[in-house]
Length: 168
Image 1 (cartoon, helix red, strand yellow):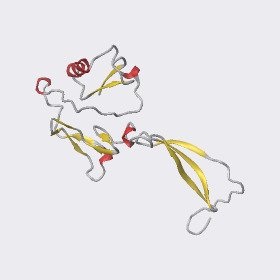
Image 2 (image 1 turned 135 degrees about the vertical axis):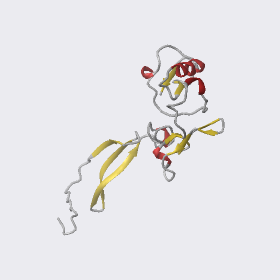
Image 3 (image 1 turned 120 degrees about the vertical axis):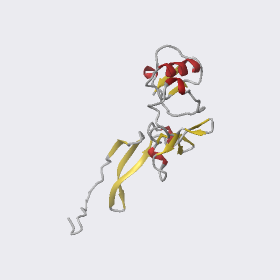
Image 4 (image 1 turned 135 degrees about the horizontal axis):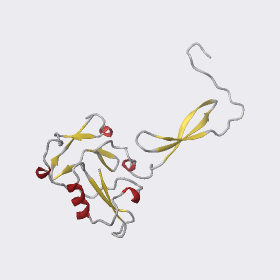
């Protein structure tokens, strides 16, 4: 060990060392022990979802946040901001409700549609509500559930034959 606390590792024949890491935002990265002209270090050699929008990661934009073309933002509906950014310097930390919704009576709120979003690469049909629901049926289920703050509706294969409704 040198006086600065830095270790020098000498590797006679570099062995291929790799590992997968699930990042806090839900993205998986492959790291490899790489030789850079005698200096070895861990490098990221592959990032899953790199070919797609970074927002495809399940937690890439944080809670109540949506992503489009790699940019995270708080959703708007009816040109109103129901959410505000937690950290104005980094939108990846998510959004929070712009007003307290716990005190709102069920007959004083309504479901607003944010629009067509593509949030995840993988949709687990077993996690959706049982039975085939339409978009309107999904909205109705959320309206009747006092704990529901949001509902997402998806077509798992691009057709109406595999509809999924998720309550959040």
